[in-house]
Length: 196
Image 1 (cartoon, rainbow, N blue to C red):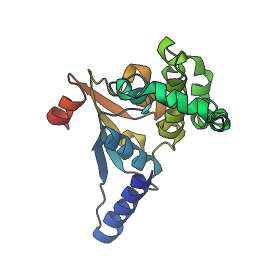
Image 2: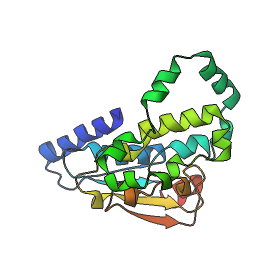
Image 3: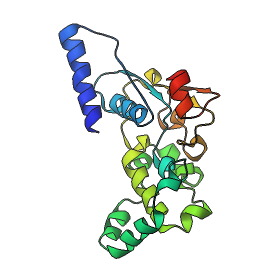
């Protein structure tokens, strides 16, 4: 969030001090997610071109390419050793509550949201289940304001991007209607080189 706020300070300076009218933020992977967040919280319409990111970071940690790099047993042991975590988890609801309150159409389709579908692997792993909840709460762009002009947001995606598994997330065109995207025949890392 801090980078998004700094980005908006820079956009304001560009506009007010240098007279720049057309501003676009971009980034790849987490940087792309941050660019989208910056557009979301901007008080003025700004364009964003997020690359190789999507509506939430949840899949990156729980089912994507990085999920096998996490010591799930140790994380689960930590969760079980600290009962004080449970009130936090309970307070987060589905992790998407801010989005569901703002968008009643999505709220009516809650059972079909990929972010809330529990795979057998996640259900039997307490740590993955809790991380999924936290990641949805803090990173799902549906929980943040729709940009002033969502038509200025254009995603560049990789068809074989297994870091952000798009099939396990609601599309940005549903999260922020008006958002557009293009999909290239590439993965996450090679996409940086070929299309970033």
